[in-house]
Figure (cartoon, one colour):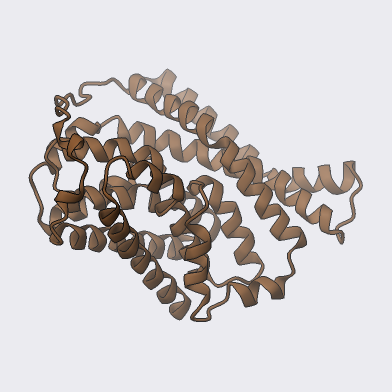
Length: 336
């Protein structure tokens, strides 16, 4: 890596740090000093939350996606399929789930790669392990959770999300439900393996920048919507109400899953809502169950999957993953 490139990256990082760690001061000055809003009003609290969280989440997204874009330059969908093709053992399910973590796909955008895996001969259960892991435990969610809540919560989320993906995929593979995949999927010719090798450091950095432009360009609207919802919760929803509705009771976890499934968002858009819910007293396991249901079992994903899978397999997929999410929610509520 050239000295010129190192200086550019170092300067960009210093600028990122300077902006990120002065956001709270800038927000307080804008909302309470310049605009003169009262700190005791509901609107002021909601507005300040929105003004602070929007650049904060976008800055975190930019850094995380850039780093993952550089890392992903060493992998391609073709080489990933080649690694997983024809293997249906437990290590292959673990590998597929881990690969899902480092791919920045929401549930819907992971479906085309899911189809590619099947056409390349990757077993159904292994493919499902990837499909579940990609939206549920992607690097954006993990990075944001670590930044906002620390390594313990992020680590538990990673471990339980991976475990859910691995076990769900393994069970789906053992059920022998290949006949419930639409016939046209297996008629698609597989793509040739074409790994991106021999890229220079500059080219890998360029790929990181492209990833930021493409992904942030797609998800920013969900980020704003998520932060707006979080701001409303932060400013207007009574703390006792959420604590009772989304507490650690036996019925709160399935309620969170049921409410989360019809929604559509991605990790970037749902994290601000998670943050606001936790600040209002909601139980961690219940909130994480809601987050996982939104990202891994979204209604738009089920609609897209219907073009690939028959209803019985989709229903089995939903049931197994929902059960795994429920277990995660109850476990977090029990230990936190």
